Length: 141
Image (cartoon, rainbow, N blue to C red; front, side):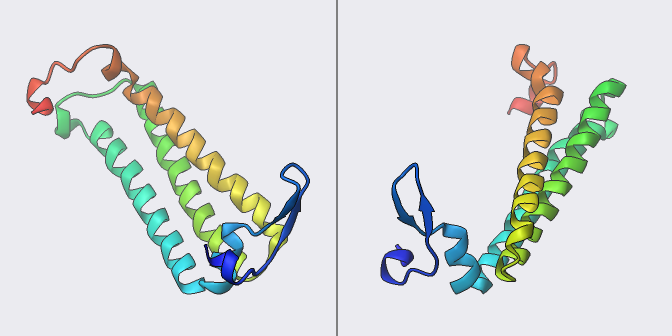
């Protein structure tokens, strides 16, 4: 709604056939404090969620089981990819506020690639729980 009142930047989109302001432009140029703070909070929350989910799987004291080596490998890869996505998210906000448009594409790619890889690895690690129920009934309570 902000761009309806005070448009900061427009792009010609031939698919839509008009001028449109992207939400990242509004946040990066007009609402810098909220934009950067929101990006940092999002990055910390995402990295924390990935860490918590995979720490539970990697810690043998938590469930009393030890996952096979390939699952531990996927968990570590998900952790690293989650950190990459978080760094990309913070970098994206930082460089957008500095109007460094040449870095926008690589940072966006880094963020989405990290999210995709961590989501895929998390799905692989936890896929066995979708097919059969856990033998630890107390975890479902």
